[in-house]
Structures are given as C-alpha cells and as structure tokens.
Image (tube, rainbow over all chains, first blue to last red; front, top):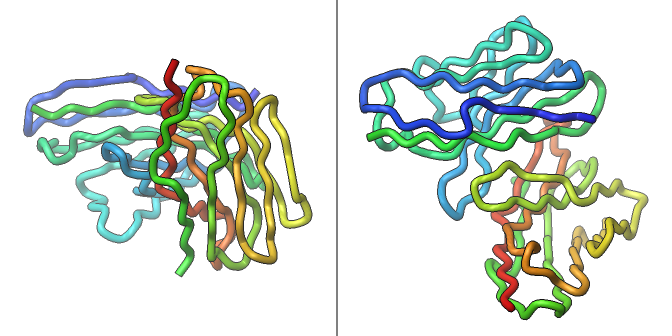
Length: 115
Length: 113
C-alpha cells in the first residue's frame, strides 16, 4: 500500500511554455502533499506544502506565481511550472502523507528539461 | 539550525563486500529517522524508520542503528550487490515545525563487479 504516482515521468518543453505535473496517491487519501525539487547530485529541496482544499505554503525563495500548486482532492495534487526557463530544468518529486501519520510516501519523480 | 550531515559523500566497493554509511544530525526535537535509497532518476524509497527508543532495525541486508544520545545513525549494507548502487539519504523528522523532514545530502554508493 501507500503508492504515489507522478505523471509524466519526463517532459521536454520549450522556454516560455507551461508544464503541469500530476501527483496521485493511488491507494490512500493524502491530506497533505509536498513538492520537492532536486538538482543533480543534490538532496531534495522542499518547494511547497499543500493541504487539500487550501492554498499551498511555499518555502522561502520559491515563487508561488511561477510554481502553481493545486490540491483539489485527497488523491491529486498538481504542480504547474509557468513560463518555464532552462534554469527550471530539474527533477521534481512529490510526496504524500495521510492524516495523523508521520510518514511521507514519495512519488517516482518527473524529469523536466526546458530547452 | 536543524542539520543532517552524511558521510562519506561517495563510496565505491566491490560486489559482495560490506559497507557502513554515517549520518549525524542536530534536529531537535527529534521525531524519527529514516534511511532512503534513491536510484538515479527515481524517487526515494524507504529502507528503515526508527524512533527515539529504537537502537537498531533491519530490512534484509540493510541494518540501521540509532544513538539518540549522540544523535548519530548508521546504515550497514551486508554482502553488497550491484543493484545496491544508488544514493542513500538520511532523513530526520522533527524540529519546531513538527513533521518537517530534514534531508541529508546523501551518500552515493557504487558497487562494482
């Protein structure tokens, strides 16, 4: 149990376009979902925390207007990278947590390449 | 500041050999400590989780230890296999924000034939 999926697994886009990444909890309800970014040979960096039905909380330095997060249901959160630039190229990983359970289950990640 | 330091940064071992990875942390208050394995281009997969009262926990060929007094943990891999080649990340939960995860930078392990 506790499987988290991400779609797409990889995406290549042109600079200036927007890209949407989906994160789904397949067999449990996730009251909280997290979005991370990971650059090569670096650890995961938390971008934002989203609770179902409310606005996401962004970490310092993360532009909320650029990285739009929607957590519309207990099984789905989306991250939209707006007006993507090459420096946004990275590995984006989501995780999900059940209510009152101190465990995050990670998705397989999405590789974004902006040309 | 809540920090998680891992050593070594990278490690190369021969297939079949054992190895031990280290994790020191300053996260307080402490909730739990996890070791994750992250294959290249994949999300982290949990290996072990330990709370304050647990000293050791095994998962197959992986054995994690925790010394909450000295705030140190180790991950021992026995009889390494080529598939063990990955990044191993120590993650400590806690701090003033409760469930916040504090990530180490990981140890990159390469197992060679």
